[in-house]
Structures are given as C-alpha cells and as structure tokens.
Image 1 (cartoon, rainbow, N blue to C red):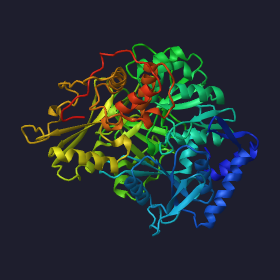
Image 2 (image 1 turned 90 degrees about the vertical axis):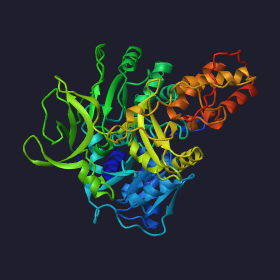
Image 3 (image 1 turned 45 degrees about the vertical axis):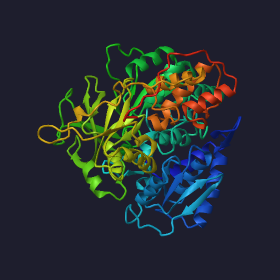
Length: 593
C-alpha cells in the first residue's frame, strides 16, 4: 500500500490524465469543468501565492467554506507546501470557529469570496502538533473536528498515509478513471475525504453538489442524470428520506454507499427493490480511522429476517478485534468493544495528550507484536460469516444525521448560562422513531431563552437540542443519583390552543411542519431550527410543501421563508390555492419546545 505524500500522488495522477475532467460544478444554470491540467495549474498558482504570504511546512490553515472548486485547490496547494488544513463549516457560530482555529494551532484561515484570501491570526500560535513536522505519508494532511465529552471539540489529526489507505488498493469500489463521484457532504464531514480523493487520485471525475443547496431527491436526480454520476455517498438519514420520497432518482448510480449511522433494514430492502442495477454498500468507521473501517456490500437477497444491516469486513490495511473491558479478545458471537488497528489510524488529537491516552492504546496484534490501536467505544459482535454487526455504544455518544454527538459537550455549554442551576442533555427517540437531543434545565423561566441563545452562539447546528424542558428540580433515585428514567417526555400530550380565523394556507403549512417534526411546532412565528428541526427535516419540509401546493419551489424556499406564517403568506402571494384543511394541529404551549 502506498505510503507517500498526497501532493506527489496527485501530481502523478494529473500527469497521466492531463485532459480528463477532474472537477465539475454548477455555475448557475450550467456546469463548469476543470481538467486535471487546469486543476494542477490552479494549485501551482495558489501554492506560489501562499508561499509568498509565509505559509510554511508544518503549518495548519483553516478552510472556512462550502463545496467549491477553490477549496479543493486550496487543499492541494497547502499539501504542495507541506502544510495541512482544518475544514470548518461557515454555518458554525463565530465563537466555535475561533475555538477550532485555536485548538488546531492554525496560523490563520482561508476565506473564498470568490478567490482564496488568507486571514492571518495576529499572534502566531505555538504548534500543537509534533515538535518537528513528519515527512512522507506520516505528514499531517488535515485535522477534522468531532464532538468532545468535556465540552470542547476534538481535532482528529489525520496523516496522508491514512487517506491513501482509504482509496488505494481497495476492493469496495473500483477506483479508477471511470469513477464519477458525487461530492455532496459538507467539507467539514469526513465523508468528503472519500468523495474528493477517491476520484481525484485515480483520474476519475468529482462532481460538486451546488454549494449552498441541501441534497434533495429532485436535486440528486438532476445532477446524477446531467453529470452521468455513477457513485455517491449519503448519510443514512438522507438515504431514508430519499427512498421515502423517490428512490428512482438514484437509479443512475452503479454504487451507492450509505453510512454515518445505523442503516434501516426496511429502507435498504425498498432500495434494493427499486434500484436493481445499483450496488448498495454499508460503510462504517470513526473519524479516527479515516472515514471507513469496514464495508458491507449488501446482497440482493438481503434476508427479511435481518434486524440489522451488518457493517461488514475490514478494509485492506486495517485490522479489527472485538475485546472486553480489559482489552482481551472475546469469542466469535460475543459482544464487545471494537478495537481498530492499521494504516487508517489518525495520529491522535491535536493538543490533547490526555484524550490520546484514553482512546489510542497499545495492544498485541495477532502475531504478538505491540501495535497502536483505537478504542471505538462501539459495541459489536462477529457473525459466523466473519462480518461484524453493530449493536450500540458503551457510553452516551450517539450519531444523529451522521454526526457523532457527545451530549455532555452540549451539556457543558448550557451549564454556563446565567441562572441555570442544573442541566442534563440526553438522547431519546421521538414519536416518529428519530433520535433527538433533549435538554432538561433547572432554572427560572426567564433564563431558558438566554440558555438557548448561548447554545446557538457556541454550538454547531448538529449539537443544538431539539427540545428544551424546564424543570423545577431534577428527579433522583433513592441513593441521590439522577433518575434519567423519570425525566418527563417532551412529547407528552399538552392542551392545544386554536388558531382563530386561520387561513387554509396557514393550516396546510402547519400540517406539513407537524408531519415533518412528528408534533405540532411551538408556534407559527418560530423558525424550523428553533423548534427542534434539522437540515434533513428541511428537506422533508420542502418536499411536503411542494406536494401540498402542487408545484416545485426553489431549493432555498424553507431557508428564505423560515416560519409557518411566512411560508403560508409567501405561497398565497404566489397564487397557490389551498383547500380548507381542518386536520392541522395547532401549536402546543407549555414548557417544552
């Protein structure tokens, strides 16, 4: 397996495939393209500019951007200089972005409006990586942030060697010039590593989903058909939504990878029936082992009796072991923690040696040699066929919409809000069987709004609680411990208040919101995210509204008109005729929202 710097790998690929299309992206109504020669030229120019601005080998630079060709150029230009990058979502609160740059030891960050501009941090930080930069495949490629249990996000330091392990000499996909891969994940999500470098290190074609749009069934159909995409990766949540909406929009794909959280067997069966020419693959892996650890090509004869979709077998260059709490192997069929070893491992966490020691351990491999391993915290067992099956977690960590969530990180931030005496954040299923974060607070009523505002200022969207419940006191067991089982459900029936003289349009839009959220929203003048919605809910709401009004809406509709009232008014102003709808539930009052 190759063990060299990715800049050299890309240069070799670009020389071999100079005239082939490397990148394609939407520029309004048309798609623009760069060949490998074009991309290599852009990389050289930016590398020269960054070099003249003082970017050095071993530096780390933040990339605050969405999907854009200039971001890909910046990644390669930084690698060309021996530097590394930290992808940061522009949607993250400014305070969190600043904290991520501080933790990673970045010298500054690049913005893209429209060309890359380096914004330097005034005081050059002391390095949080190695005292001397590593070389070759061991050199740092990027740092990816995940949720941290202490209230501070963790920067996972990934070397070039680990990316090459993901996309070189593997058999879960046919990596080569014929690969046409959709890049739809956020750049700050590690699935983007596969979407970008799977095609771009093999002469394939990488097609960027429109920069500011969330993938929808209609959008996926359009881009797959027009750009002849044959391979894509979707989170399990988005996959479920697309299959529910219109599975045929994926019919042009030869390979569809799904992951980020446990797959729904019923949606998998429906996809297999609707997509006879598409190979479905369940991809599993923590960020600390670079996107995928195991893969499971889902067979056409996936049994009706299967209650879970297996996570499969380890990739080449990776080995795994199921162990007990003492890190001793358990027998086949017995449940235990999954331990991961091999070429995909990250260096560890930037600036957090205590966390390194907790999660990265030394153990013996099958030959008796001491090797480094990562404790995933995932509970699994090995099946008779050697595939592994995910059972759950050994701690409170959860995955929601593909994002790894430590409820305690959210808890630690909320606890700093003024007048909050106690706080507990837990994860529960809502009536629609979706995982939701719930924040329980002991505080005066006036303090609840300030706590929500503080969370929005300091936490990314995926870490914001879906529901907030104010309590007079936390329930406790007889021995004084918090009694989680007695925390009230935020979805208990509450008296509804009517909407006097509500228009048919308002009631129809309210019905759509209630279908998407699994309950009536707390009010008609609150935004979707204020009422516990997520990006995947925005996709579902868009689809529901289009069906209700019988016309297509612009992809940004639910983001431009953010409340029930504004959406209803806008649709009425466009001449949409609504039938009288008396079935829509009215918003619920009360302490939870």
